[in-house]
Amino acid sequence: MNLTDQTTILAIVAGLGIAWEGSKATGKNPLMILGAGVLLIFVAASHLFGAATLMTSVPALLKDLGMGLLAGSAMMAWRKATAHSFLVGGLVLIGMAGVGYSVWYLFQNTKQVLLELGPDDRITEVMPVLVRYGVVYERAFPEVSLEEDENLAQYFLLSGTASVMEKVMNELRADRENVDHVEWNSEITLEPEVPQTPLNQAGVQSNDPKANEQWALRAIYANEAFAILKNASPKRKAKIAILDTGVDSGHEDLKSVFHKSSGDKDLHGHGTHCAGIAGAATNNGLGVASLNWEGRFIEIRGYHALNGGGAGTNESIAQAMISAVEEGADILSMSLGGYSPTAPKVIRDAVQFALKRQVVVIAAAGNANDSARNHSPANINGVITVSAVDAAKKKASFSNTNNGLKRPIAAPGVDILSTKPGGMYMAHSGTSMATPLVAGLAGILRAFRPDLKPDELYQILQRTGQEVADSGKVGRVINAEAAIRVVIP
Amino acid sequence: MEVTLPPKKPQLLTKTTMNIIGTITYQDFEGGFWGIIGDDDQKYYPVEGIPENLQTDGLRVEAEIEPTNVFSFIMWGKSVILLMIRRI
Image (cartoon, rainbow over all chains, first blue to last red; front, side, top):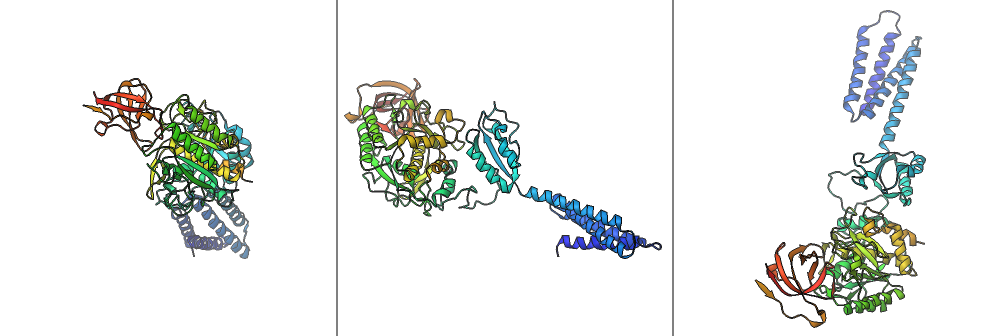
């Protein structure tokens, strides 16, 4: 018997006692009245001081008092006395208890979502969705003005019942014109970290032990993409060529996805790091994750464009591009370049060679905090130029900008964890790291739609990308989930 | 102290040498590397590295450099070959 049962019985006993004495015409016993009063005080104290919250204790007290009065009304009626006031009082109190419990239930089932509007957008533009689902809103950071911070000032806290908030989030996410970002307003507690916990209700986390350290995957909605990929079958595997210092093809997290190619040994370590970002075997219980779920979507190939010191000549780079294209690459991932406002002709010609064969060419914007217009091969027409953002999705301090170029895009490039030769793992920063992340997503798109032309593929990345505060400088940040949804049959 | 470096592979060289004055700097991206920020605000990346005894952040140096047309994964500033470098 729990506390509520006990107090209900006590309240009923008190109600019966009061009614018994109240129904007597003469000879009323004051001790009986006093005893009933003590019982009621005990009941009230038990509820008000013994429960965790007033939201549940007040309705419980009202219910007990109501039950006491109803029991009293029955006693009065049995004693042929007037029971009307006891009956009405009991029903009113039980009704009030019902209202209290309803409020508590709704409160318990309210979920909150953080909505970020675009810098020029107003909450009225998404009002039809909020009204349709009965969602209430308030500014999340009312003390921050648009002039102070155009991101924080545009955050709204939405509250609604749990059953509708998922739909509200989906509708808001689809509103790319007004909405920059939507996420659950998660509670952060100091409980021990539990590995392998899904990070988003709509997403799936891989079982790779280091996946929880890969903030970049969360930033590009990889877990949400995994939810799609785990049940999807590609038309074929896409071939991503890593043009770099080579790839450690025997690395535990790469050997199952590596395809025989000339750069199967890493002369430095840079190429292996890029390869892991582009396509490390994922959900294999080893190391890191990429977008390559179960290794079913991407095949990695390595080419020595750079030597062991990390440098390459125009010839070595062009040769690596040509070899990769001739051997059937879908994507060239080039985390390399140099200051060169006018791109070397041989590299331009190699890019054209690739594009004519519908090979997607992706290159790093460079790390000089300069314009990628001065940086080759990033500045060659037809190349997708990748700038880097940090965990706040702001331009990384070192990253070159890519505005003014034909195909700008951005991806995380700070503290990116990936593979290191010798079966190890390490975090690095640079536009070198952002580039294979884009290449990996491009590979997934090609795996579903091998017919996608380089420009069509770029348009998907761009159209589905996340508009961020620095998009004017670095383009949109890729969104794996949204891009993959475009090519899923 | 002056460090004269051995001749470089001819295919990496162009025809112009330059003298610069600048400051040694360490950058922690792309695995970390040493470069020179010239007093002309240009960034110079010695593709074959900076001598170990001069690898000190903030050290003022004078150098004779040869711009090269090599590309690298560092992608920071102008790639150069160091012909001579000394602390000032």
